[in-house]
Length: 402
Ligand code: CTP
Image (cartoon, rainbow, N blue to C red; front, side, top):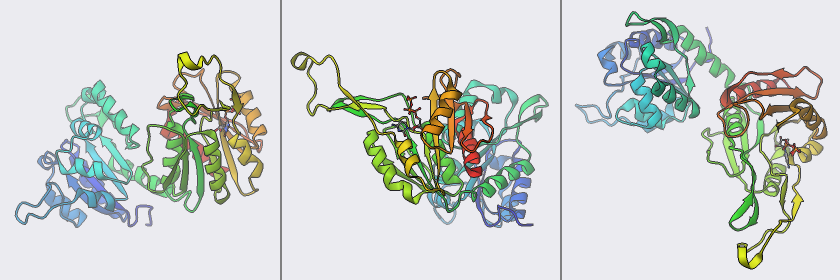
């Protein structure tokens, strides 16, 4: 049977929980699906399952310590991190999740996690009270915010005989998650995508500017997801506190709308698709001061503004029949009507409408709630409130269908 896991390098991280016995089945299934698996186990994990079983099944010595005691051979977590196409931590105990979330690098599994360039999947397993504790919830949210994939624990009878949420997802389902991930990882292969993100800032003088509250999170999430699906991404970003993780993302940093326009005009002709998620400042000071404005000396009581170029509309005017252009509309009222108007006016193929009236949607949050409108007359698609990483998936699924 050929699967998308064929030949993939997988690090299987095992931590110290009862569910470690299921990791043996998981390892068997991964190897059966054609994956090349390297097991990394925590010192506690070895209390639950022996390295002998794991090395026999994976065909490789199990890595657990920073070096081999008798030979002194150093195990490089950096090399492992680079080797992997994916890392799966299953089971992930509350303690290991906390260490991963906070960078407590006191064992080989955590250092490997911190060095991993590849996507990381985490399958929590613990008692229901630990699972429900705010500290666990917060740590899992932190992992999600790093772009890690959480394979939610199932509800059922736990080792403690309590019944609730905390049981590690069944190995068959973990393998299915990985298979669908790798199957998807090819879906945008060979495609070039231009993405704008973040705010632009327009200088008033050397110390002041006009801008907006955009955090860039939505655009960066789309860039990560597009790269994970195999696309070559050019991310033109205004000033934000984020940095891209995927090696297929080329970051072009800009400050103003004019700089963003130039970067887009340069990149767009070689791209198949452009996704304009930046919150471009509509106006800029017409004549920025070259020296700091002094309150007493200059007595400024107004700043003359000029209109910034509309980057999406500029690309809409030059796009070729083979190119697709996607815009965003963040609205406070009449969201769908305003979105539809922008879709037509800017010659977009699709527009992602979100409304500040929906709590959890819009600037700065880690979640968003969007409706997609299409130029070709197909019906609008409305989605529920989701993490921005999941919204990015919905947007790219729709882009793939354009
Ligand atoms: N956009 C752009 N360049 C601009 C303004 C907007 O590329 N100067 C893009 C945004 O990235 C987004 C879409 O156009 O994809 C809509 O942005 P928005 O600010 O909602 O639209 P505006 O045309 O500025 O309309 P509004 O009057 O609502 O601000």
